[in-house]
Amino acid sequence: MKKAFLLLAVVLMALPVAVFANGADEDGSIVIGANIYSFADNFMNGVMKPELERYAAEKGAVIEIVDSEGQQAKLNDQIDVFITKGVDVLAINLVDPASASSVIEKAKRAGIPLVLFNKEATEAGVMGTYDKVWYVGTNSAESGIIQGEMMVADWLNNPEWDKNGDGVVQYVMLKGEPGHPDAEARTLESVKAFTRAGIDVEQLALEADPNWSTQHGNDKMQAWLSSSFGDDIELVICNNDGMAFGAINALKTAGVVIPLYGVDALDQALTHIAEGEMNGTVLNDGVNQSRATLDLAINAAQGVDVTEGTIWTIENNETKAVRVPYVPVTPENYQDFR
Ligand code: GAL
Ligand code: CA
Image (cartoon, rainbow, N blue to C red; front, side, top):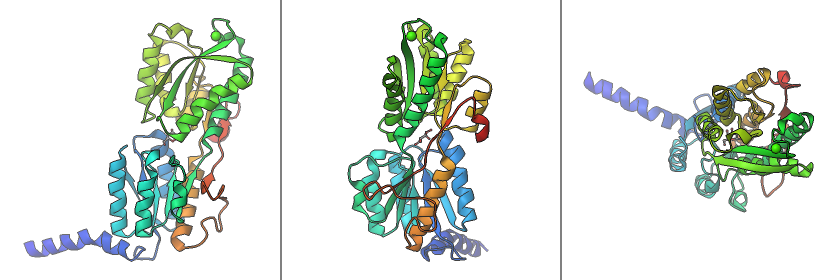
């Protein structure tokens, strides 16, 4: 009895390995080894993960998505496990955008195609080190430009936003992850839109947060409101909606209304826009980024041209990137995104 049970346990434990070892599961489906850098991230967990799962099923592929818990070392181990299991292709959301080379090296050594998504590699030339690596994401700068132009238009339409009447925008910025191409580009581009329009800006405070989190947004906004410059804040720029939600909460708690913008266009952001608590956001099209990731991954696993039969195009041979466009979301059009 005991022996039989033990045998069964051994067989069950060996099963997933045996199944993957054929390069496909029992019915010949493609097996994708994937991760999300952190399941605690609103956008990655709330938008990209469900669509990766739904779309994989629609395409008849098997996907396993693991949580890297914000640790690059953990992700490196998870990739080793996927390789040992014999997955057909890897779809990887880097934790550290500066650590792509070690990930690419692992995939290359195993001869497994690799699609990086959401966090673009920052090491120069790294995409050229393997013929079977591609990237799916956005044009990071575009989100900042769209957000910036939205803020400029609203600022010009609402002269009372210039509380102290000095013609200068006194703003605070919730940046997100330092070194993340999205965080860096959004921080620069949103503010540049003002200077391009001939409007001076003054940064009262800027805080980074590797987790892009609501808690951080709340805590920082609360601290800023009660600081010496609390009454001077005329604009809150948030590089993602998750942090914006926290800032909105802090503003509500303090009973203060200050124009506030985010990025991502999560459902909750649309509700905040409807309720006049948020002035705009930018759609980060995670649904299409998930689909592009899997379209490329499945083609790569089948050994055909990655964009074959898809609506995607690769930007160039250096970045090897598919970039999904951002879309402005305002009080006028937010209902189209529900
Ligand atoms: C960004 C997104 C953020 C966060 C980040 C994670 O594109 O706007 O909310 O999810 O990706 O890498
Ligand atoms: Ca001012």
